[in-house]
Amino acid sequence: MDDTNSLIEQRKAKLNALLQKGINPFMNKSRPDCDIDTAREQFEEGKEICLAGRITAYRDMGKSLFFDIRDQSGRIQVYAQKQILGEEQFALFKHLDIGDFLGVQGKYFKTRTGEISIKLESFTVLSKSLRPMPEKRKGVVDTEIRYRQRYLDLMSNEEVRGVFIKRSIILHEIRQFLNSRGFMEVETPMMQPIPGGAAATPFITHHNSLGCDFYLRIALELYLKRLLVGGFNRVFEIGRNFRNEGLDRRHNPEFTMMEVYEAFGDYASMMELLKDMVTHVAQKVLGSLVIETRDETGQVNKRIDLTQWKQAKYKDMVREKAGEDWFEITPDERRQRALSMGLEIGDDYEDFEVTSAIFEKMIEPTLIQPTFVTHLPKELVPLAKLSPEDPSVVEVFECCMNGQEIAPAYSEQNDPIEQRQRLEHQAGGEQQKLDEDFLLALEHGMPPAGGMGVGIDRLVMMLLGQDSIRDVLLFPQLKPKLPSIEGSAEPKE
Image (tube, rainbow, N blue to C red; front, side, top):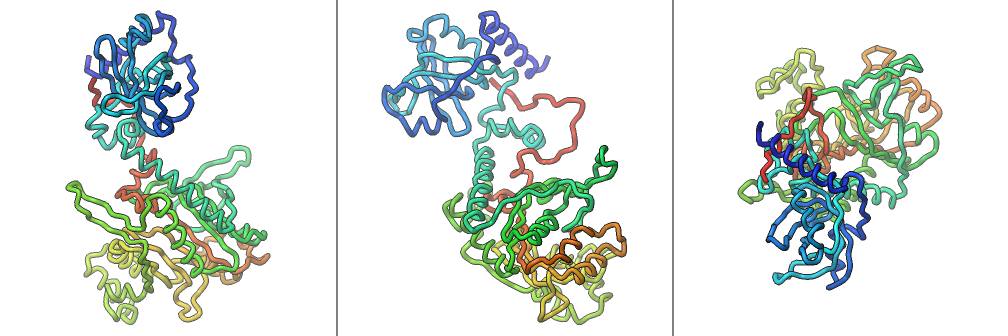
């Protein structure tokens, strides 16, 4: 029998011992007065307090013992004495383990070293853990276990817990900011008869009652624009999108997007909105507009300054990287030059896709500081308005920072005739791919508008200094592990 199974059997034996004493920990209840962090803030010598949490440390001293309990907010030390609890209650501790949940009641006091503690007067066993927690100093070192059994990572790694707590606060602050600007949060369908608003491979599902296929949405855009037609001037939605495509450190099949639409705005008004929103969130959550990440030696390896926002045109950036004559040479010459630069260019790439490969592979990864890349080729963004100065490009920006796109925004196309033509071109003549209901809505009249999408996961990665999208998703997508997952969290007691 391996060590893990031996520990599990020992813990089951302790559970049976509790049951024989008439204590079923899974039936007990406790209502703490507050969370542990609040309890520490409200310390008052001798005051009664009731708390609850998981045992994370245990020091037996014979007739007395110290143990720590922890909840989401923090930890506190508890001091138990046989003479106060009585022999029968005190003896129950031999049936408890690190990882069990307790409700504790006692009085505040400070130890000789000044540590805020609770002098235990009574306790209730709230849950018995049958598997050990990860080893305290190492935590969960296996990357797959970290992602597949995230709860082990959360219970053992304070830094990981902090990332997800801050992610929640970031979302809260985004909502607060947009609400203060008069934007209304809405919800639109996740299952759609036609996947629109982006070029991506959708997931397909089938609705039995309606007898037809639906697609998990790849973007929020087209339904939110219907709301502009209906008369809502400022709307936003934060929700999941689904794309049946690859996985890497920046992509997950399901991811969180926010889209914002403002009637009578344009891409320039979206630029100001994004800048104000990101700086607001950074100041609220981080207390700073300068974000630094450090390597394993503690040296700063990246510094993002949110007080400095740059702006550059797409064509100018491509010329700087691929040659001043890039847009004057022939498409075949562009293809050959891109290949000579070491890029993989597919035989089926259209000319604009060759240029896009230059930007995506050789320019975007270098954009660490906040940069608005404006006026992209019209073929890349069929839902945006053409630029009056150059009809080959559209009024668009892509905001890049931390080496990746964080947010695209457009002056939204509201001409139903022009929109139909461009969607037909994108669909390659396949009429069934056109969202006729959306085009019908446009024919009823949509006001000029600015619209923006913000990749929430990527924004969180940037703000919190995380290099992989998996480190900001509680449960990133993994191939199922069958038939079962062993509790391989390197237990040590």
